[in-house]
Amino acid sequence: MEIEFVLPFELWIEILSWLPVKTLMRFSCVSKSWKSLIYQDRDFKKLHLDRSPKNNNQVILTLQKPLFSGRTFFPFPVRRLLQDQEPSSSSIIDDIPFEEEDEDEEDNYHDTIGSCNGLVCLYGINDHGLWFRLWNPATRFRFHKSPPLDAVIGSTLHFAFGYDHSRDTYKVVVLCSIYYGRRLGGQLLTMVHCIGDSCWRQISRDPGLPVELDHTNGLFVGGCVNWVALDDLQRRIVSFDIHDETYQSLSLPKGTSELPYVEIQVLGNCLCLFHDDNRTHFVGWKMTEYGVPESWTRMLSISYQHFQCNDVILRHRWLVCLCGDGNILMLAKDEGGLVIIFNLSDNSVKYIKFPQKDFGWVLRIT
Image 1 (tube, one colour):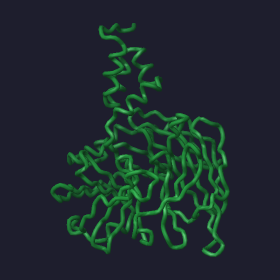
Image 2 (image 1 turned 90 degrees about the vertical axis):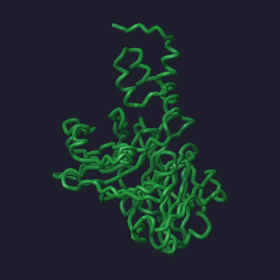
Image 3 (image 1 turned 30 degrees about the horizontal axis):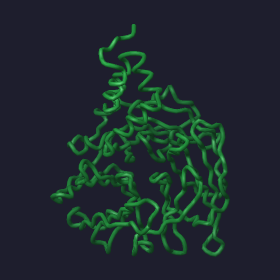
Image 4 (image 1 turned 60 degrees about the vertical axis):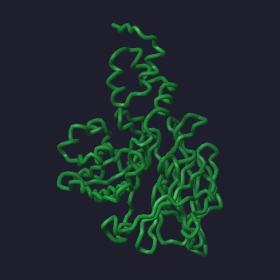
């Protein structure tokens, strides 16, 4: 029986568009019209996305399953870490997003490759090759798997995930990098899959860009996915436009291209870069106008003394996010379950070590 509302439906749309995702999921049970609006109306989804908090970060916790190579993923809000709520087996065991019996026996989730508009892209492998699937942590909804992709023999694979706004579609990008050595150079093969299509497309065999890429997934910002590449002993950013499906090369901030290690992240819809400075400071840069290298601006420089540690912090991959009003810097170790929360306003530091007894954690920030 459909419920009648006193307010006009247009006004309910306005009200619902400001609600958190989990609240919307509960309200979808109110009526058929609300359920259709929340789950199927693309215009409403875009409106809700535009009005969602941009700092509503989550840590994706990964459980390594003990008997085989598959993994299970758990969303954990960053705000709960800031409230001293540490994740534990008892706090999330009832919130498992994937049930074992729902999975194909031959498929195992392997890892995440990126996130966009609240969706996380997962990938796995079976006897037919690599496959990808989108997952909404808030709704637990999973899209159909992509067609399998055969790995190119002798290549190193680099993944990325982004949104083509003009076509209202999500794309998975796989770079197959074959490096023959400094003298011989290499080859870069680019494969693209639009979520919902039944095939992969080959874009280019030789875009004329460096093929020795850092072993990280590409980051989506400014309509492009980005990797750090090494070109003739200097680092630069290789950028792939999701809509035009073309490449460009972006230079790093002055004085950073020859550093042995740099890390790029996306903060506040800006491409950011972090590095160690003379083993004394943790330094961050922000590209205020995407695609314009001249717009690189130093955003922070924090002494390791404030972190209460030494330069070892940069010897492993860390994920960075700015929380709340931008005064909280969070560094999450990619593997091992360690988080450092640094308050930029008063230089206070807090360490959070995730439990290792029941779960093997791998962290991603989305």
